[in-house]
Length: 179
Length: 308
Image (cartoon, rainbow over all chains, first blue to last red; front, side, top):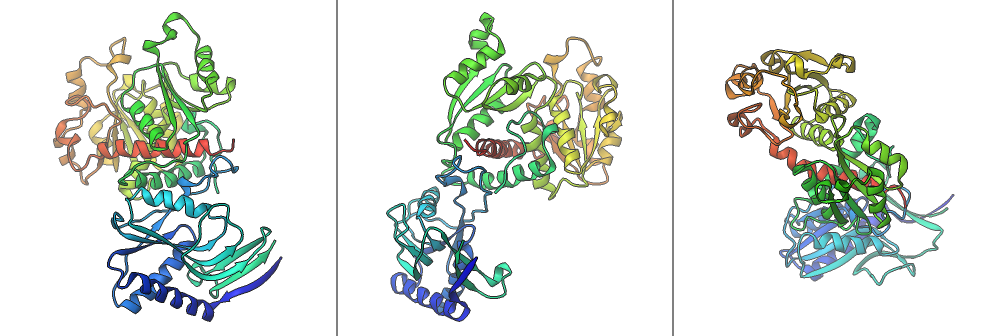
């Protein structure tokens, strides 16, 4: 198994800062915008971004977690059902701007499911997508991100591995793994 | 990724400790779903479920139907009172006819113990037992233990007494299995005539005195006196039963600590349970009903997801 480092701690910090600046450019003080991290792995990035935005704006930015397990399109097409995670949307998203946050964008199917899941909580006025790693040329659906941490060109045999310190890794690192 | 160890939910007896925890975990998520503005997920949209009820039921049937609809499954209902069963069709024929219409799962309630087991050996669909005679009622036991876990944090180490008609109760047997698998201590309490012989072989305590039983327990699950199942008299009169085994406020006030009161419904108010207890803050009866939908969604979801 070969691993290539595509983003590491310091660079990741810069990337997150840049993404936050871009978000502020479009959403100003976040008075009408909420962040939704996608379970299970998008929530670490969402937390990081919420933290950084809180520092930059000197006020807390509303954030929720969205689990998409029950909305997936591969239920019954895989051998076993996936284990669900908690959903926590502690605000009303009706007429809000929503920024969906995930770590890696690959086929776009999770994001499709996330949009379905999100609609169950109301009708947002606008939905945007922020991803840390965008795997280009691999989409199954017409879904593109609005904010990109890093673009990478990958092959289907490869996999993007995101390690977070809060999850127990030694450092924040993002790897491209050849299986 | 995880899966139940069984293809059908026939009884709690066949489930493992891990299965119970997986069902609870999934039900936690569904409980959150049914409290959303839009209480529906599309998981089972390509699945058809038949609710085959050979015995009357209001709450279980409604609960299953709601669970199925909130998972976006297609639902067909069948009840024996308005069907060809009256014309003499056998159980297997009835169900095979329903399956010929391409049904994926069957929820069955039947008056004879073992009917769901019999079906599971002959047909291909996933079977869910919604009560078979006086044998098992697994989803009720799951929602009861789920409600205890929700109220008290966990089931392990808790003392639970099941009061009333243990002899005719499928809820009691399923509850005993579920509680024991989750590490609770179980006691049954009722008049001698309504306790099955050798019930202590299941490893439960037996107590005839309700006050002693209530003083011992953390949770009391009060069963309904099933008047329709009693061809012979098991106790002299309802009035006498109420006197000895009716749970009321005075009894609870005498206890050293507050206990949680459960009832699978429908309640005979003023018989096994008095209104001043049923509507009190100790009762989690309506919580049980809400949890019933979440538990049934979890069971349907986990059984349906076992591959095509």
